[in-house]
Length: 64
Image 1: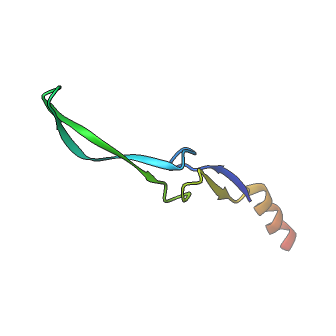
Image 2: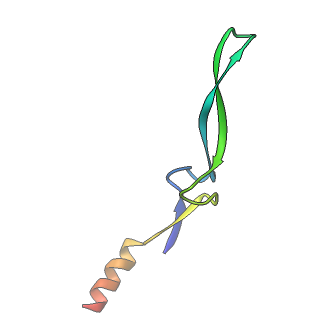
Image 3: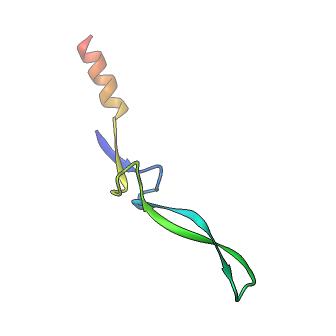
């Protein structure tokens, strides 16, 4: 197995999302309220383990 960057957070370990909105007096309109959460896919590490296809093919042909 090898590690690759997490496809969900692109290796950051967290994801940003819109958590609602707030009214800005200076702009005179509503603006998005952003928040950060740990990535669920990689548990905040930024990497996921991936099976290497060449190893999997080798193991299948070896067992046959």
